[in-house]
Length: 332
Ligand SMILES: O=C(O)CCC(=O)C1=CC=C[C@@H](O)[C@@H]1C(=O)O
Ligand SMILES: [Mg+2]
Figure 1 (cartoon, rainbow, N blue to C red):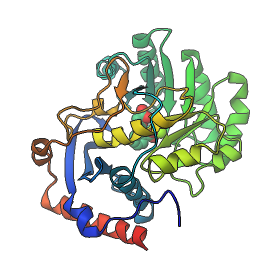
Figure 2 (cartoon, protein in one colour):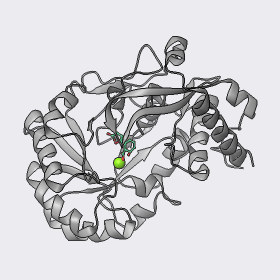
Figure 3 (cartoon, rainbow, N blue to C red):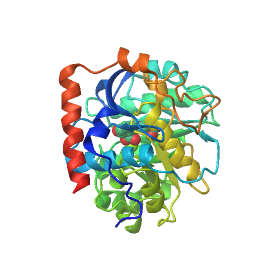
């Protein structure tokens, strides 16, 4: 029996407490303009299940485990009440950068998306330059390629971006082997490598650390099965971590903040400011960044907002079926 596995509630209880919402984004992100999510009015606190639509059931069931853990189980003690967060800059044109950054008041760090398939290296350089112009020399800039480069492209592009002073490069290449090779090649540039997909989509989330292929781990609560499981995993690595989200509603962000609050020695600003990229949320009091941080607290669901943004019947049925299948995998 896994001591970190919260008892799985009955499917009826789960579906009775589920609200499927479809939230408009303020700006296109990851190719989507609407974020679908399920929020549950669970016994201990509101919780969220929001794997992206393309994830298969095996992967999504880990996200459901996280939702259940947060809503139905006691959570670890918190070590801090506010979590410093980064601004998240989607792959927008350089002209749009100031308006994006303005949504993240007080954030001293920005994460900039790069390697968007439809764009060029010049687009990336222009976007990062625009971020540096707004943030000034003191700002911290990290970039996230979502595994979009091969080793040569990564080496070349990081070399071009290095003058903008990068805090780290997140998932420059897709595989652990490529990350390891790149890390050896660019060591002289002094730009650290962070692993994201190599943690959250891997069968073994610590394999990338053991391979010596990353300097920093990006850790998300939902894909690792919840706050308590993520904490147990990251206790086994000596690497610094960045707690991030997946464009969650404020409910999922509360889960991420709870994880970040329990991590000893949090060295980096966290990717939990993304409520600022939503044009609507499920609470009247969203976890928006204020003075560069979000608070660690539970979120009260707004029945009015959930009904205003309720997903249509077809999408609701799709999510209910997905929950049933994932529940079946967990209850086995
Ligand atoms: O880390 C952040 O600043 C925000 C979260 C974020 O960038 C992501 C959210 C959701 C899906 C991912 O493609 C993406 C990421 O790769 O980190
Ligand atoms: Mg990432």
